[in-house]
Length: 160
Image 1 (cartoon, rainbow, N blue to C red):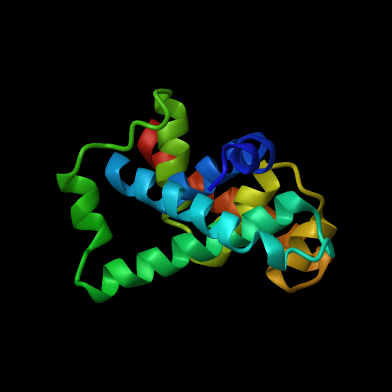
Image 2 (image 1 turned 90 degrees about the horizontal axis):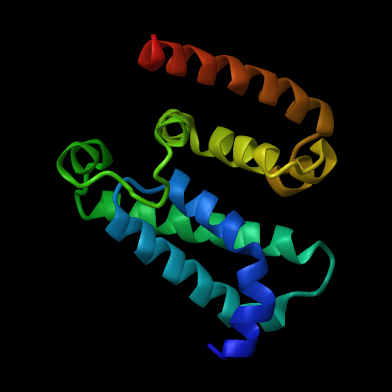
């Protein structure tokens, strides 16, 4: 991967890649592997980008697909994410304990709900989220409200 491509096309969106990888991993080691693989796949698929969406949307889709694929591979190998979470060092990508609690709660959501809430946290409009997920903006609005309620329930149990 050329330095120029990384600096101009990936670094400005590193926060998005980090958030997605963080939501699908439980250890620092896995996080680093997922992040590296996402960057590699973005670089490999750069010529397939047809500018039908924003570059950030393209990066989001590739990163999410990488995370889902790597999680499936880990599960096929018999890796139990919950056991890994208990036995491994906590992901240290973020030092803020409240942020760690939020990501732990997000990890308890379904894969689709995780994708929706991450896009929402990135302040993407409902229409764009709907396009990425493959549903209607109204469905996204309802889903986000339900997800927020789920997260509140999960976090109330940990914070109180």
